[in-house]
Image 1 (cartoon, helix red, strand yellow):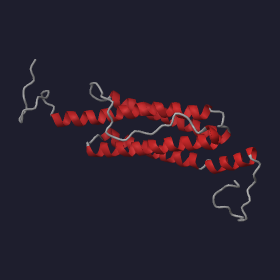
Image 2 (tube, rainbow, N blue to C red):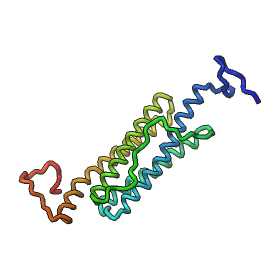
Image 3 (cartoon, rainbow, N blue to C red):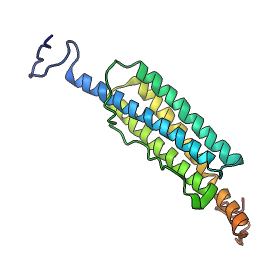
Image 4 (cartoon, rainbow, N blue to C red):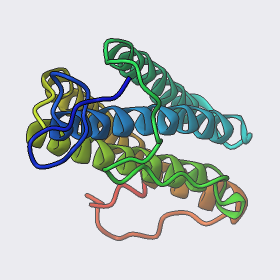
Length: 193
């Protein structure tokens, strides 16, 4: 069946403008790409957790962040299942999270935390991009989902970053037998914590 030409010479399915179709594809493709990135985030956080460096509060923080990634996958999948059928190109119109393959082994727990914090902050930035896309292209479900996920990851990144000073301090005491030599009774960097 031949699709009639729209004014201006563009061929589009009846009742769907080329602009609307392109916008829909941009939103769907970006959400699909971010869904894939969420899976990578979950796997990376699990690797950091399983690296042997993560114990106690660190392991709990990484596990909570991994569960957050799983919940975000479910929400994105629900969004995508409500979209019109069509092949996705996988081309995101937003910056995707940067996910290191491994945490810096030389820095133990602090390295795992740094890698996790970088992933979480990068994911927050990706959701800022998705939110801008949702606003610009009028995608109401993503207008609600994107800022929530952005806030989730920003909070998780802050929580993980807050564990780094104690991990560095612990490593200095355990592996290098260095105690804090700060003369200030109210150490502002938390190295004594």
